[in-house]
Length: 208
Image (tube, rainbow, N blue to C red; front, side):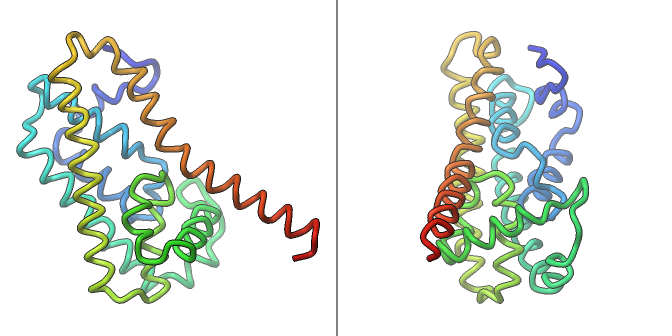
C-alpha cells in the first residue's frame, strides 16, 4: 500500500532494524527527535512483522532497548546541559515550548511523567530531559523508564503485529489505522495544552 507523500511502510523496509532503532532512540530522548512519528512507526513496524518483512522476536526487544536507552540519554542531557537548553532559541530541530510543556507535565505528575509521557508526542522526547534537569534520582528514574519503555515498545509494536495477523487484507486499512493512532496519540497532549490555557485564562480574569 502506498501512502501519499509519506509511506512509513516503505521507509521502514528501507531503514531496516538499524534505522528503526535510531528513530525510536532519538524520539525517546534527543531534543531534535520530537518530530519523529514514534507511535505510528512502532505500529507499522509490528504490522510489517506480521507480513514477514521483519522478525517480531528481534523487533520487539530492539524497540524496547531503543526506548529505554533513548530516555536514559535524554536524562543525562538534561542533567548536564539543561541550563543551555532553556536558553536555546527555537529552530527546526528544537522547540522550547515542548520543553516547557514537558516541565509542566513533570511538575503535575512527578516521576510518573516518564511512563505517562511515552504516549504523548513531543512530551515523551523532553520528559527525560526535564527529569535530568530536575535532578531526579536516577534509580527512581530508571525504574519508571524501564516500565514505560516496556509498555510502550511492546504494546504499540505487538498491537500492529496482532491486527496484521488477524485482519484479512489489513494493508487496505493501514492508512486509516495509522491516522487514528496519530490522532489518539496527539489527543492527550492537545487536551493537556487546552486545559492549561483555560486555567491561565481563568487566572487572568480573576487575578488568581
